[in-house]
Length: 104
Image (tube, rainbow, N blue to C red; front, side, top):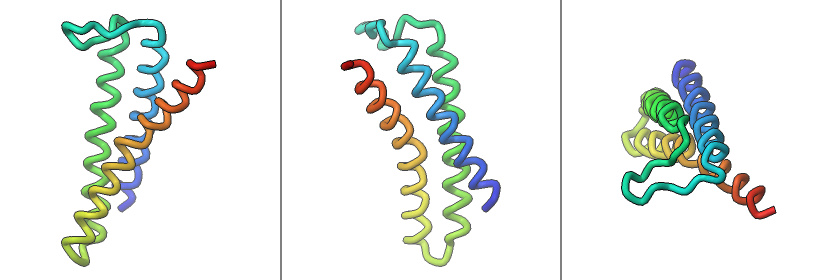
């Protein structure tokens, strides 16, 4: 359970850092329609942070699901909830903060 909690916390930190860097580096750049990539050079580093965040969130979610193994339904619900919170919430927070500061 401790390994799961540490993995989830690191996953959230990596997701937050990756989303924040992505929001800052692409502030005045438009996305290329052909390749779907931004012109900034930090995009590979950002993608690495987000990939590490996904891997750590999967490890943490499976650890939490294993600890809650009283019934299969509870385990599945815990895994899905942890994955949704760890992977979705940091990006949503940074996006909302970035949009608020971009408008003035």
